[in-house]
Length: 80
Image (cartoon, rainbow, N blue to C red; front, side, top):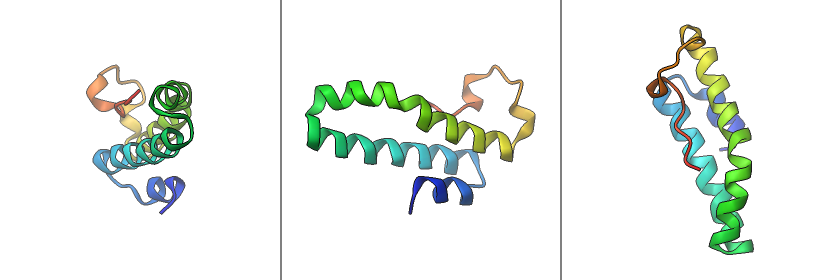
């Protein structure tokens, strides 16, 4: 399933986190084959925010009360 579709069907925090993790792993694997580990990691650091923000936006659609939360446990955990 695509990342967009995974996020559309996500209904919980864990499902949003899982979709984010799955997309990061998929992109990293593809980049690693193409560029090697070091460059793939650096590229993922640069690309991570755009992947993360989509998952975070979906989480806020599901749970709007988290909009003003500063608790990091209530946000998607970045992997890069």
